[in-house]
Length: 216
Ligand SMILES: CC(C)(COP(=O)(O)OP(=O)(O)OC[C@H]1O[C@@H](n2cnc3c(N)ncnc32)[C@H](O)[C@@H]1OP(=O)(O)O)[C@@H](O)C(=O)NCCC(=O)NCCS
View 1 (cartoon, rainbow, N blue to C red):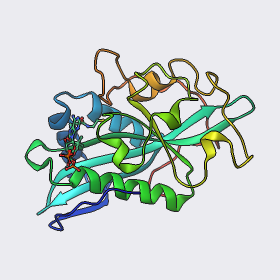
View 2: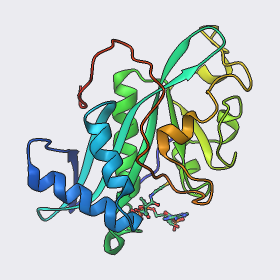
View 3: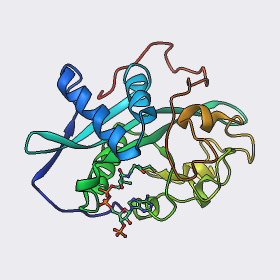
View 4: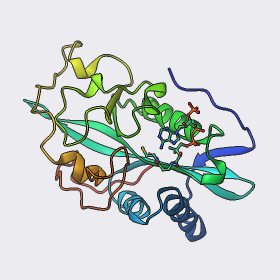
């Protein structure tokens, strides 16, 4: 299911949150790739709140790519279910189209599957994410403010979004609170197919009520 990629000179690993130099390099990668500071600031906020994993792509001691996956919540008719948000992912322009983005996404998804996560949501390029198994059809039962073709879901296992396993189902148009995605991704309609933003996450749900660190 996951896309293949090459270039073994680039190493994918978990970020070192104790290294200020590395954290600044991650900011630089996001600022450069997105052409602004919103995503870099989003990464810093997520790191202190709902991040599950933050991975870097390292080439000869410099950081050339980054991905973050974080906790998100889906409201169903009967419960608030956990899912994973894939955002942002960034590769320095000089290193793009070498499969580094794919390797970051593959590794991130593999780690989520290993954790037992069931659903990953992305708002992004409709021509890029389907190769990793993301599908707008899978997300059709989730209410979102995004262009439907850019709002995609991936199931890491059984058909959870359809509720076919009988565990839970998502009622059409009631799964996500309106605006949830915007709060989560800071997605502005005029920035179609971009995952961006720094707005406060306003979902307000927490599994434990505790702040979480990533990489667990
Ligand atoms: C998107 C991004 C992370 C991909 O990283 P990458 O290392 O170049 O990706 P890969 O080499 O694995 O894959 C390259 C593919 O991505 C596609 N791609 C890259 N940017 C794209 C875009 N903006 N829209 C659609 N497809 C895009 C390329 O067309 C290429 O497709 P191909 O394999 O069919 O030729 C990188 O282009 C980037 O940092 N972009 C700026 C930030 C951004 O938009 N992030 C994603 C938000 S959804």
